[in-house]
Every structure is written in structure tokens, then in C-alpha cells.
Amino acid sequence: MFVSWIISTTRGLLMLLAIAAVLSFGLTGTPADSFEHQRRQMVTRQLRARDIVDTHVLRAMETVPRHLFVPKDLRHLAYRDTPLPIGHGQTISQPYIVALMSQLLAVSKGQRILEIGTGSGYQAAVLAEMEAYVFTIEIIPELGRQAIKAIHPLGYGNIQVRIGDGYKGWPENAPFDAIIVTCAPSSIPEPLKNQLAEGGRMVIPVGEKSYQQLLLLTKQGGEIKQEKIVDVRFVPMVDKKGKAY
Image (cartoon, rainbow, N blue to C red; front, side):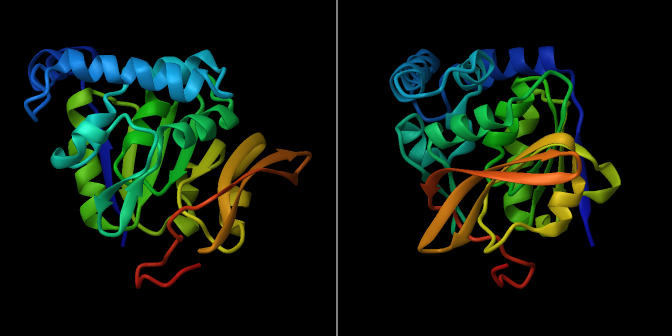
């Protein structure tokens, strides 16, 4: 049975409180301005210096405090070009991959985006900062609740978090302008294809644990076209019993 969480807060006030109070000393003894400097360096060296050119993505990555989405003892590593463990055998993707997948979605203000694999909540926050409406599903209850705690103080009222099986998507809120999948099934789930709107885009890693490809899917005239982007390695997409799809 799905448990739905709706995050609805006054974004401006809570973002101000989060920055002025919660982030003022980083919760780790690291001054907030140090994290801000690291975030700017991340955008300059890891994103702009490569192939991330979407100004909306760059602005969102420079704004969202990534260090609040990783365990406290790893926050000093939050802006390095590497994935980090977030518990329960899961990881937060390296900043470049988050930016690349966001750029491939070609997000526009007000679009409805389905995310499969909430994880830390960071990817959802980046998309919400780009003024999309984000519907995100996490199958591990503890991670889902953890993500809500990370997102809530930042005031993103345009994110809904559901705890459940992402393979099935979120049919009652379909169709979606874009779908982003942050865990790898062995093949593209049919329910997700069906929930993608006409003209929509899906970014998804597909393959076995040892070899996966990041694919960009577009739907035109009811037909799905796919393009290989890059080889990647993501955690597998699993059902409630932990069995890989």
C-alpha cells in the first residue's frame, strides 16, 4: 500500500530560515559560506567545464545545498565529483550525473515530472528549483522519510513524495511531461512508457549491474524513440522484496 506525503510549505520564508538559521554553521562546524564556495566551484569545474550548458540546470545546482542531502559525517565531501553513500545500500549520484540527467530532460517551468528513486531527495530538489512539479517515488520507507526531512526545511511546495514501487509509476497523476529514473531496471518498464506524455522525454539507466546505458527516450506520435547517451552504473531497480526488475 502506498503512503503519500505532500510537502507544502511557504517556500520563500522557509528557504530564508534554512539559509539564515540551519545553514549558518552547516550543522558540521563548517561555515555556510564555505559550502557556498564549494558549490560554486562544483558548478564551474565539474559542470560548466564539461558539457552542461543549460543555464536553468546550472543555476539550480548552484542554489540547492547538496550537503544537506548527505550524511553529516560526509558533508565535507558533498561537492566532490563522486557519488556518496546515503544508507540502505543506496547512493546520491555524483553532481555531474545529476546535472546531465536534468539537462537531458529539457525542463520547462510548470512541467510535471515523475522521478523513480527519490533516494536522498537531491535530484527532486534540483528539478523543483527549476520550477517543475515533481512527483517522486521511493521504495525504501526509511529513505523516503529521510528525503522528506531534507526537503521540507527548504520550502519546496512543488514536490510530492510517495513511498512505493516505482516500476508501476504514478498512474493517477499521469501523464508526465518528463520521467527521470535513478535506478536501473534490466529493461524499460512498460508502465513508465505509458505514463509519458506525447512529446515527453524520459531519462533512464538500463542494464544489468555490471553494464548499464543511460538512455534518452522521446515520445512522438505515440512512438518511443531512444538514444544512448553514456555508459553508467546505478543501483538496480528492485521490488518490495528486494528482487531486481
